[in-house]
Length: 302
Length: 311
Image (cartoon, rainbow over all chains, first blue to last red; front, side):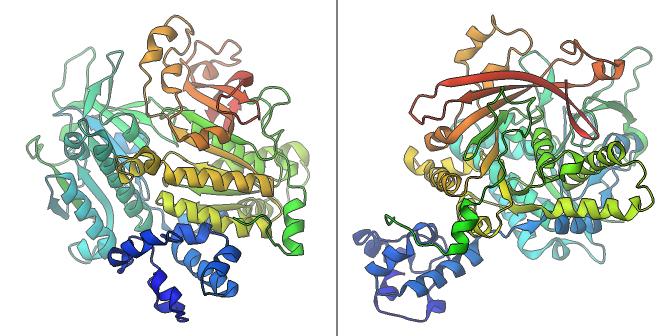
């Protein structure tokens, strides 16, 4: 990058200003840069004082200001007025029903698009049954890197391409996110946590940009006081907007084998800790899949 | 950087013109006469589900509502780093507060109530600017870009960042083995923020998620406070030092036990609601390496449809 500036190249557009990651000449320029540590990344240029820089290299002050403006235009996120954002949300937000009425009531009529909803529960509590079973496209992934790759493909291609046919995609389900992420945690802490946050970021971007409802399932652990809580720890707890905890019903009377209780643990719309009971046999079919299987599915609107 | 910086006359006036001071933004939260002044930073810290986002919406609404409805009528920039802004919830709170303000002030102006409600809501929302950032590099560049917005909008007094700790793990992994490189991006953001605070006299509120459990404090805290014994375990600041030096007020949020600490609950319904506790610790503004606590205050609130209600 610096080479072309010092040659007095005046065609700013042809300089690959895409930042360190995307600079095709990065590898070969690195040695050059280390000798003259003036500028290295987009952030350094934007942060530097244009007057001082104009004195050091052969560009004019005005040219540097223009470059700075172009870089900012390419790389920053633009502020949006609250009124416009609200208009957009009103027209694009939809609610996907879980097809179980008591759960829908708990979730304030269903899964909202643009958000991540989490279902956590032990084995056999009916997590896998929540998902709408008609017209599902299944992607099987067995480790976190394949999941990230799969999410990236969805993001780039748009869910329209990934869907089966004429229906528009309204929900993305990751079952189960904890089975993929848990093996990476512990040990080398940084990498596992970072991968987990990358998955979280990818899911949120998909939810917001393509207006889909994202549903993830999680396992449960026992907390410090012995109470049941969702797995994956404190950092993940901030990621989903709404969280439900599923468990087998207990209480007096005949214990119906297929009844489950769902507790609303986190919500921005309803008061917390309200419970609802539902019957697993409400939907169709029995529970499918082995507990160790990890699946990412796209499901389209009926 | 150079010793002096040139700016146009318009920029000079935009910079020096008095932006609204937010010292009276919420007297329940801050100790007496210790509200956030010009150039101060408030950090809201706590676990998931402790009411941080609700508090942020409460402060945001207080800023963008017009003066007649109990607000301050100032402009706000909301930097959203983890897509956690719930516009529908924000609009519900705004509508409730506008309705409450309208019913208490002028009961006879009901004929044109319908269209003016829409217009009032739209005016409030137009004072809010929302920016989404996906990485700490983008956050840094966006803050540079916001400088031009700050010079062109003298009504902009508040910068809200939700949350400043969103890229913590990504930066740690991206920085490899060197701690300095891991904290590099957030350090640069903090330095830029301190320059913006100084030059433009705005105030910054930021949330940070509690993700670390401090096991050393467990033994000592188990004998001290009885209402929330786990509060001090999660208080440890973990973000980089330049950010910690910037923070002048820390609001530590935690969940209260429902029903027990509502000694002044008027109705039975209130005693069943989940209460949240906030402890405010204000530091003296001399920025040395060790912060001296100037004042502190504890308060409680619960959440209704119309937002936060203090006890």
